[in-house]
Structures are given as C-alpha cells and as structure tokens.
Length: 307
Image (cartoon, rainbow, N blue to C red):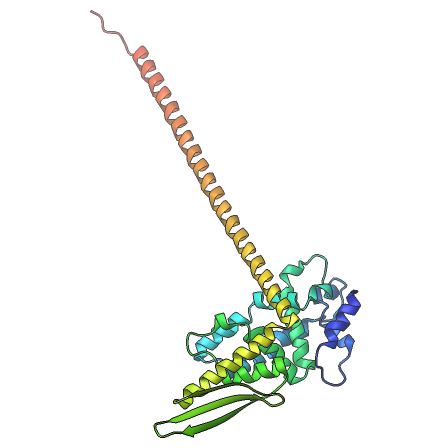
C-alpha cells in the first residue's frame, strides 16, 4: 500500500465532524522541521501537537476522574503513566504512522514517535466526534492500563462495563433486579442485559450487593472474551508485546552500556593511579640517587685530618 493510500485508510477509520478534509489530516503528519529547513513559517503539525499535549490530555483526565478510583495524587500519577512517551510511542506503532509521517532527514523518527502520536490525538480532539475521542481514550489508555491503577478498589466496574459494551459490542447495558421470597430467606437476582441481544450474565444470592457484583463480573468476562476474539485486538496485543520486548532490549542495552562505561572509568582510574604511583616511585628513585651523589660529593670535598 502506498503512502497516500495508507493515509486515506487511517483517515477513513476516524469518525469525523462534518467538513473535515483529508488535507486537514495530512497537516498533522508533517513535522515543523520540514518547513523550518525551508525557512517557511508553516507551523506543520505543531499546533496539533499542542492540542494533543494539553487539550486531549485534559479530555482524558476528565475520563480518568470518572472511571478510576483514588485520590488526586494517585490519579495524577496514573495519568502520567498512561500518557507517557513510551505509551504514546506504542500508539504510533499500532497506527503504523511511520509509513505516513514526514520530518527533516537530520532528525531520528525513533525520538519523535510520541510527538506524532500527540499530533494525531490533537487532530482527533479538534476534528473527531466526541464519542470517537472517548472510544480512542478508553481503547489506548484506560482499558489497557490495569497495571497502573492506584492501589485502591480502582475501577468503577459499572462504567467500565458500559464503556466496554459500547466499544466492543456496540450495545448499551441495562440491569434487571428481582427477588424471590421463600419461607426462610429472600434471594436476590441481578441480570445484565444488552439492549439488542438480551441477557449476558446473571447471578442470585442472599446478598443483593453480591448478586450485583458477581453478575457484573460475569458480564465483563463475557465482553472481554468477545474482544479477545477480534483480529485487531490480537494484533494490538502482539504489537504491545513486541514494543515491550523492544523496550526491555533497549533498557538492557542501556544498562550494559552504563556497565561498560563504569568498567572503563574504573580501569582508567586504576591506570591513572598506577601512573601516579609510577611517577612517585621514579621521583623517589631520582631523589635517592641525588642524595647519594650529594653525600658522596660532600665526603670527597671535606678536608682530611692529618695524623
């Protein structure tokens, strides 16, 4: 697929507002360095980068406050982790943006992946439908970041269930609560239903709260299994795995590099110490020889006593 065809393919997948053209999207793919090298005042994708860095991140922060439990400090740390340069670079790889972006030849794309991802997100913030922006936020940041969750009861499971149902199944979730009273006890039942296809989970218990929690857990498991069956999800997970392996290789190489630098520094320090000791030894030998010679000269020049 050519570069232009790839750009069109990515563009067509975005749920856009009316009036947004392909040329608008192409602007988000050109780094400002291309124009700076030509002494042009064209801002390239820098304004989209700004929107991605602050406006989109603000939109994501609003979602985090709704979906993630924890205090303000914990949410701030969580947002920093899920919106890190490494995560943004993973999104760049997942979207295959390397095939469509432009930058000055003197710059390394590897160092600017997160910048182009920010530009893409900035374009979405300005031009995509709000529901699509929410879908992207959940898909690339919140739904795949369980390991960053604050150490509290971290998820609003009902909101996550609803979001997953809309994202994966394109349906809305409803709950049906009922109870059966017997001679000895009351049994509570919660059903989770999709608005188009009906129930996907249910559970009964003497505890109304437990019945609800268990039904939500079963429903979420059902939807996650449906998500895992999707080819694009498998590709996404595989790319995440590859990205993580590459990250570990880079970290290992960097660690090895630092270790070798430490060994070299230590060796050089030993060589310097040896050279200092060698010079000191040489100077001591010279002083010894000179002292010996001086003593000999003094003895030779002293007057002899007559007997």
